[in-house]
Amino acid sequence: MKYLMFIDAADTASVYPSASLLAMTIAADGQLLLKFKSSIGGGTGAEHDSVALTIVADTEKVVMSNIIAAIADDVKGRELVVVRDDIALEGIAGVSSIVITLDS
Image (cartoon, rainbow, N blue to C red):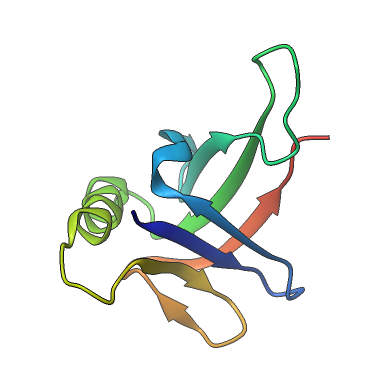
């Protein structure tokens, strides 16, 4: 199983199983929104966590493909995918920063 890791500039971190990824959508020009099943476990079915990725405008297709390719990578020992680490300035190509929002 693959896990997706996110660390923002405030050193807030989240790790989600890739199977919890519900959708990738464009929230605004230069912003890709990833929605995950709630890590808190809301009861109505509408709750979710989200991670907003800042990307270069009009590169969403490339960034989405990079994320999908990282999840599909079958190399043993690569179970953890660092989508973005704002502290170490590393992660999936095309992502420059993130904001993590947990279901409340």
